[in-house]
Image (cartoon, rainbow over all chains, first blue to last red; front, side, top):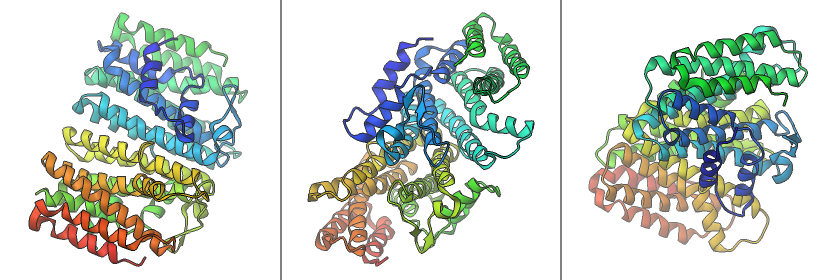
Length: 253
Length: 253
């Protein structure tokens, strides 16, 4: 999956300074991420007859939000990870303080990019959607719950709740935001929202499976199928999204 | 300075759950802050013939951004403060992980509140202003610079740069955002921006003076005067802002 426009736009918005904060931000953003979420934004927009151009600012913003969440999750006080994608984590290279601040700055920059790069009526809806999905009732809430239940016995419902909050809500927001950027109808926005939610859940299950957490592979396939069913109303315009679903379900790392 | 509407609106938007994250967010937001920044938003709007109602959502959002910055600044990896306003800091009560996440969630909630609580054309300008002022080129950049130069010899220009980024830019944004919420003219927005910048710098100097950092009290008075001069064009409508300048310059803690 190669979208040179995503890399170009990320470069354009990231600070260019030689200070530790700027370097920490660039280090984590350009460290080999697959850009799954921004690609979902762009392809969801296209499925709704939108252009790549209309979706680019929100797409890049979502990648920055994802990156900030990884930096903070990796911190010693959180998951305490030294390596990510085969490279030392942000706090290992730049220290904890700069890693915390780099995360804060990336989250802030995400909203700045949407405010600058979209039309107001649309931008405000996109910001509302994104901030709802990644706040206390979304991604951050999921990480808090995950930490609270770390090492404790979890039933299937609790696993699903954590996966929904931590991962699937951002996938869902990515798809809905692509549709919003394309000024799609409510029916299309909602279908893509359900698509993203199911795709996100199956994505997380495949992740857990790779990590040997014994997740249910049959369940992941069911979710993938549910995601695909939501794409029916878009016809051929959703072909690329279907390919993405296929690629993500087959990945091994 | 008592604005019950600010407390009521904060309560309305903060999560109500019994989980650690929600409790950590409420703990830090309701821990005796003076609400200086939201009051500046509201009174700046009023100086531009706006209503309290139009300024309330952005006012509360700015208080949340300020609170998040305090939580993260207090962390062990940053300033490592155990107490704030006579109470244990957020990470002392709820642990580092929850403190990091509470800060993240408050920052995110700030943008959500503006998106939901203002008209789109205005909201997007306010979000652009706020996100610029508190990101890598504003507040977060100031904190990074402060940490980088911690314990090192700083000249007067470096002190001013850090104060501008860490404190004054958010004061300036608060005043400008009040004006934006009131749909003020560019001339008024810019005057209030300069007002806020000078007020913020003098506020930080008084803070440093209280903390015994040997800041220049005459310089602080000059800045206060400069701030007041910017209010001339608003006539009597800026009387409350002038009172605030006076109260802030006379505070001892």
